[in-house]
Image 1 (cartoon, rainbow, N blue to C red):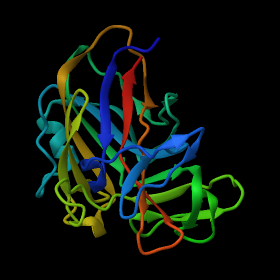
Image 2 (cartoon, rainbow, N blue to C red):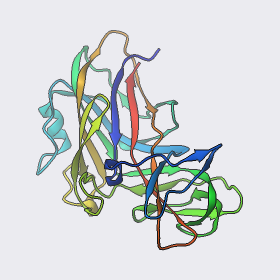
Image 3 (cartoon, one colour):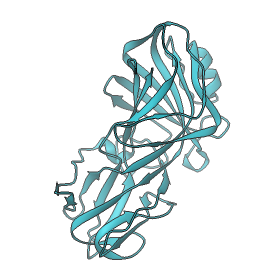
Length: 277
């Protein structure tokens, strides 16, 4: 039986910091936003790669400047509870608990008010939608049925639209930045976001765990989480899993310069309940 939620991790892209409403839908058919506007859409599946999850007795120093993730962990009396330095990919489906293919180390009993999580900087999602009007795919095609298709080298994920429904293929994209003040400012390397049970300070990191000076050298994301209520680890805890629990994993932008509207889909915010059981 699952124990108390360990913490809620939420990552956001710049657009997530602004008031973005869910796309209107009736009977599973979505209405595109007005010209030059954005609305949020759920994904059918979302894949995240974890490297490390640690819980801490005190607030770890942030991995900035020359301070590495390892040094941050040491500063907060942290205990690593899951680790896979090669990366453990978890395909998260809404509301479904997923195990992590990584080494689990049971933490000592005690009270932990902080956490440090290291994720890959690239995320993958799979999504398909039917729209109330014909749309133009970011990659190709037109029609009311649109889907993700292939990998991205910029903000927008490749999408294809057609007159009939087609099974989506996974699309991957990297986080460009964590700027929370303006969507036009890119290559920011850190930012703070609010969680339902605390706050998280996010940092882009290099492969080896050192802070990245810009997006071009970023390979990982380190999140330092401060919980509003500490978590108590007690007898009986034997494992850990992840539950995907959000309806907003992407943003649909109506490009006013195209006709029909271009289906421009960006990775948005997601949240994951990480729980001991």
